[in-house]
Amino acid sequence: MAPMFSPALLCCLGSRRRSDVYLSRAESMDIGDIPSVCVVINPNAVGAAGVLRELRALTGVTVHLLERSAPERLIAACAASMVEDVGVRFLAGGGDGTLAAVARAIAEACATLDLPPAALAPLALGTGNELSRVLGWGPSYGGGTLPRTLQSVARGRIVSLDQWKVWRQHVGEGNSQSSPTPLLGGSSQPTAQVSEELGFQCFFSMGFDAAISHEFTLQREKSPGSCSSVAWYAWFGACELFNQTSYLERDAVELRVDGMPVPLPEDINTVQLLNIHSSADGIDFFGTGRPSVKGELQTFQQPCIGDGLLEVVGTRGVSDLLSTRMRARHSFRLAQGRVVEIFLAASIPVQMDGETWIQTPCNFKVEHRSVAPYVVNDAGRTLNCEL
Image 1: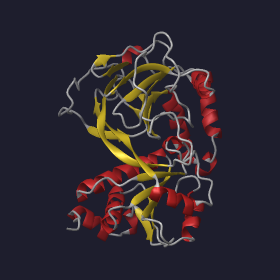
Image 2: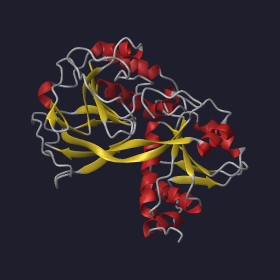
Image 3: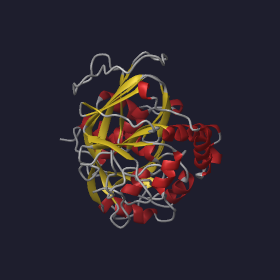
């Protein structure tokens, strides 16, 4: 029996009002005997215009433009592609945030249609492209090779990437004096007080690195054309280096991993939860393959993107970031585990898969949700973890 659309998906497929269109164009193209690949492009990503010009020269590929106003459109489009061909694979053009959005849409469409998960591959058009580096697709798409890329996506090896859910419960919002209270306790299920569920597949961090990313995001929104390079990242990083802002006050942050409290060293200014080991333009903060130093986590499993474990590290500041980029050291290894709880009593910059915001006092509980299939480019150079 052919899969059936839910009424919500049928409504999304049938409605095409321009005011709320999420997929503003879908075209059918033909490139011969390449197995089915559906391409989703974030038109605001760096290099998207050039990729769209390349796609117009091809036929046989379904192409969707992604907008942020109505994610149900993307879910419906993914579902339509899978109904047409249950073996379809997806290629997402954008950064880590775009990949996360497309992965969520695919998962929801598969769950609605009771189909096995469809595989996804990155086309690196964003500013970070960390997952693209890890999976062997490189830090950026240089253009001119889309037919070969589509063939690689259609025929490439598939690996499982952990997906993490984040329960966020606001506590004393706006009151920076309230103390961290572990309201979520040790239960694997959210309490009735949990306000919302978020998720990530690459990394989740809070502190100075998220502050730099947040300033960059604001600058990009203010002047999109000015953020085509890493110059603004360097500028905001230099500002952090000279300002020496303290983001993690010890009386306002509490960390627990698998139910056990994890003390934060006094000089730590960022806490990072890592599912993949590439962030901040290819830095491996965990230091995969390097021995632990005195005082940090000594015993751990070799990091793997599908092992159901998160690596938790702390970094002191921009000078540490530069040393880690030069591979002179790694960040302080705090823990490795399956459930991470963070209790915040003060506002702090946060980033999750490239999306940034200023988080008011809250409790976070991070635990494993599922795995998603991703396509590896074995012809490329994979980074920093077992695949």
